[in-house]
Amino acid sequence: MENKSKTLGKYSFGVGDRFSHQAQAQLSAFQKAKEQGVQITPVWNKSYREHQIISSNPRETRRQADLAIEKLRWDTPYFVDADHVTFDSVDFFLDSSDFFTLDVADYIGKSTLDENIHSFVEKHKRYVSELEIPGITEKFIVDIKRLEQIGQSYLKAVEEAGRTYRKIQASKGSDQFVVEVSMDETDKPQTPLEIFFILSGLAGENIPVDTLAPKFSGRFNKGVDYVGDLDLFRKEFEQDLAVIQYAIKEFSLPEGLKLSVHSGSDKFSLYPIIKEVIQSNNAGLHIKTAGTTWLEELIGLALAGGEGMEIVQKIYHESVQRFDELCGPYASVIDINKQNLPSEEVVNSWDGESFVRALRHDQSCQDYNPDLRQLLHVGYKVAAEMKDQYYPALDKYTDTIAEQVSENIYDRHMKPLFL
Image (cartoon, rainbow, N blue to C red; front, side):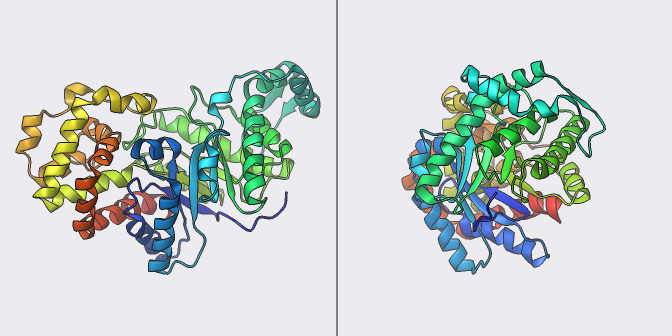
């Protein structure tokens, strides 16, 4: 596949700036890593869902990213990600984004034309037998029935990725944007064999895919640590990486193709595993975070006290009252026990430090409350509705908030992953 002028680099890190106030604070974390000799490409990501909830637009995301780049004199690549886009929603992002996450999870298991399945099987008949992938001890049995099953499960999703890619290509040109294909928001992980043939399909659609976001076992809940079998995650991560490295050569995919981990913020138990595997394989990584920065805004406001703390308390109380409304869109990626949410009276009695101890993701702190943290993670709609009060507070307490934002990204995320 042709070389692209827009390249992502070996390590890249997605950050979410929901209210377009923290781009400089976020970028300062990348600067700290750079000063330690590790180049990480910043990617500002925001989904169509988030834009609709907040009533924002991608142009503001781009503007804030550009301002931060200019202010901090960042001189290496950076990107603005149209996160989890579909064929129907991608137009919203075409003018402002140069990274597109093509979310085709809804098309997994959907039917395509019988002749397309037949062509898929015919194309891959040469793999019928035992398939050995370097780096994986297990041998994979490939027969016609298995090829048909994979085609029936994933070919429609691959075709949809191609359709969306060509729409972006027609608007922006072939080499002016980064492409991620996302299949993580589905019920079960893809097997190594499925990923192998998915990548073949993407190559057949002439998509110069830069990152692939598969589904992993376990729970990747918003804003909290991974819940699941760490040994199983390691196996899946190692196998997926091996498949990608083999598929790059087998299907002439871009040399820089790498794994992407979605809902990657705060998965502290996974970071040592990921770091060990990518370093031992000299592999790249894209990791995507979003709401963890918005929670640091709340922490900064609580630490500021006074008006800041009052705003945080109001957002929490409103979120509890609107629990079903706020949690509904995120039901598959949160696990909140309402019994563990503190009452309005208790929260009103807290000072800023007490609130921070409950909210900050510090598992060594006995006051840390993951249920409260998850609720506030999805409660950003309340802050958006309070923007006449919330935005001025972000400006007023910017120094306190920026310190929290930068420290969270660098110390809790980048250091354990990359340094």
